[in-house]
Length: 473
Image (tube, rainbow, N blue to C red; front, side, top):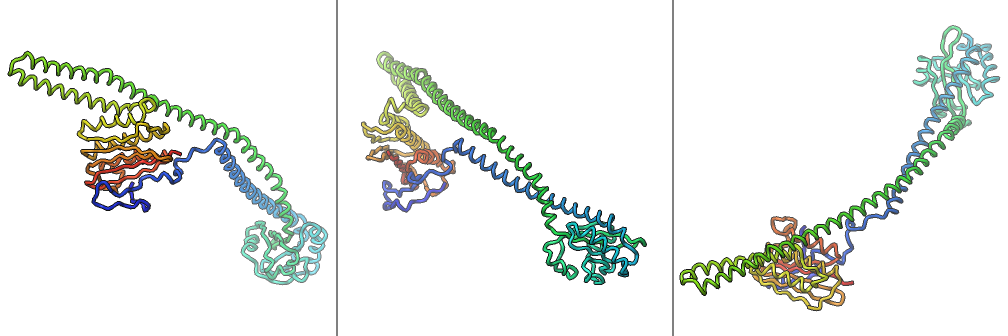
């Protein structure tokens, strides 16, 4: 984290350690970040689940419609090919004669009778028979007989391989000029054999509406089934979704309960350890210091001059060391389990923090109103930030003096902790724990979670000041 001076905070003149430029670490006036928003409600999660499933059902239904339409079209084309196969082999081929390729009138008339009596009464609108060289040797449109047009690759393939093919007619081609008034047409062609064995190409034209009708019939058969299955799947998933949301909610509640239990267990354990130290080792060491001091005093009264000069001094030194250990242990007790704010009060709890600094030669001045009265959550935040700030002072600042002050305005309470220690460069990356700035993460997290404002003022060799502003509204 790199901190930058805020434009709204006017830097005081340089050179005065007491007037260092303030740097905004946390702006409590900004809205909380998205990462700190409360988790979504069960109703919202269920609504998202339903919407996502509806979108999925719509996409699957659209895909099913497309697949059904494609299958229906393929089926309709297959029906058209089958119809042409039946008409060609059953009705037309028996009427063919070897004179048809030479456009013999009797051969043409025989085919025309069959076509007009049996074929044109169906859905067919045009019939053509082609010779392999591209001549139309028969058509119900007499003007086309004898005309020659190049056969396409598909027509030639059908003649060669005997396959029946279907495609949408290209009405722009000159051989289809008499069919343009019929609208969109489907042409199907297959080979027929003359008695001599020569192959001709039999081609029928039918209205494409028949394909659309067949396609619609097939689609109407399968689309409702697909839609019903998908909707049923959605209805089946709704209870499962509600159950999933309920389980997630219960799991979240259980996690919070376990977290609270873990915090309570940690607090109880810290209280137990602190109680054991206070009632056991601290009391024993305090008693030992009294015993050693008493022994030194007794030796001064009754011992020889040499004993008083050497041994009594040693005993008093040992007594001082024991008292120092007792003081250090008591400061450790405050850190392990601070005094309960609701019982001791915030002013008393803050003054007790001075105990941690005095054994290290730091003179901490505490300026806190005796009648300080703030909400419990505000008092807890002030104490926690003050404790963490002073811990950073003792670890990294190496100061001779420090101050802790709390000021209360009608709608704002301000905590300020400053020292005359070595300070540091605030533009360095605060996440570098080797530079001793890990504590800034703790302080900024505390301030941000509470919606408070946190400012820092420091410079190398100019000490450090930390200011926390908490709105009371």
